[in-house]
Each structure stands twice: as structure tokens, then as C-alpha cells.
Image 1 (tube, rainbow, N blue to C red):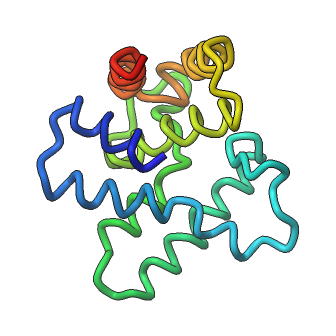
Image 2: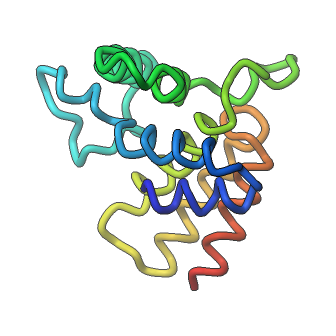
Length: 152
């Protein structure tokens, strides 16, 4: 998931510092799951209820903030569950691009799971496209699609 996030970040032209923050956030994006009493079946946070996703992100951001030196990374982790925009509103410019990248890459990774067949990868991408413009940033999904095409 971290490699996929970085590839999308590069495709979108992120600078070295932003890529480093993206990498750290991608590696730590699910650390909040450690505080759950019951694990998420299959570990797929994309299948969890929005409130549970938010809770995991908040707990993960709190853990990252404890380090005291990764505040930008903590914000990226914290905002990773935010939708691209809400209905009848413009995009939420307060959601960092890195958070939007992690949201899409994580969804793809969760939806593909251990089945990397062409059919499963296409299904995952199609499902993400269904959330385009509200749940997922269209620019990020386009970059994700390009990265996945190059990997084939």
C-alpha cells in the first residue's frame, strides 16, 4: 500500500518532502487498528462503517503525534477517511492531497486483498470509480489508474 501510494504521489508530481510524509503516513495509516477490541475481518478498513474508519484514523493520528516530530504525518493519517467532498459542496481543500492518496490506495489494496487476478483488480478499480467525485478525488483516481496500467 505504501509503494502504491508513493507511485501515485510521484505521478501527481509531489516533491521529495511531501513524498517522504506520504510514505510515513502510508506505513502508519492503520496503526489505530491496534486499539480495536475486535479486529476487522480480513483487515479491510474500507469495509468498516465510516464512524469506525474515523475512530481508527483518530487513534492512529494520536499515536503518531506521541512521537512529537511527525505532526504533518499525523494530520495525513487523521484526515485519510475524509470524503473528497460532501454532496452539493465543492471539494474539501482542508483534506491534504496525501490523505486523499492514502484513501484511494488503501481502498484499492483492501478491495483486491490477496486475489491479484486481473478480474479482481478491475473490480476494485470499478468500485473506487463509483465513489469518484464524492468519496475519492478524481485526480487521485486517475493517477491510481495510470500507475496500475503501468504496472501491468
